[in-house]
Length: 241
Image (cartoon, rainbow, N blue to C red):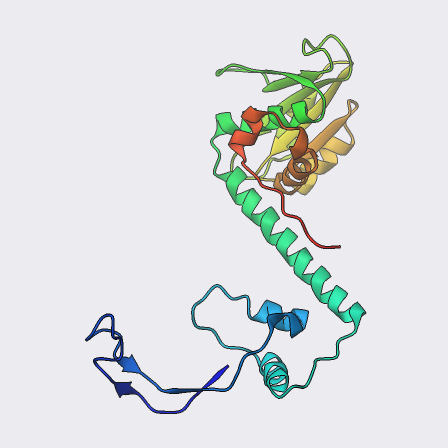
């Protein structure tokens, strides 16, 4: 801990290793040291800025100065736990946003392979349609991989900005036959009418937007094969409980 004790001074030989450089200085009077382990969780978080220079809020400053004077911080365990939970929730929220950004940057072929990899991670075998007209069947997933055993999941993948409407859902569900289960994935989301159309479909039909897709990726990522992991490389972060 230090306190600035002078106005701006130019001392060309301030840095002995590089004379003439780093000569713009202000003198500092060093007051002492504070052990980081003695700080409360909220203050530790405040000091976690990635910038070289940043401002410390008044509460953190007061706590640090009190520690410098030998006054220990009294903090209840419940409060510390609450601060930790809030920080964890923030980290999880940010990580999901980062993963969404990664997913959005995939091209259409990669998105199709990612959805197929997710289904394989869920225990199904998949057939991915070749490029060209697929009649609303980008992926077929089933226990045997041939679509002979049920459930037989027919998947349509739309990777674009605009949301899907009721017309697209109606067209997709109209192509499903008895024994099929429909899965419609749209990174652009779905309109209210589209969700209503899916709910009233005679054949089971699930809509997956970007938020749900990322949640499913996180839920089944440990079961992903190497091809799917290559599309969205993730690392696990451990958090104290």
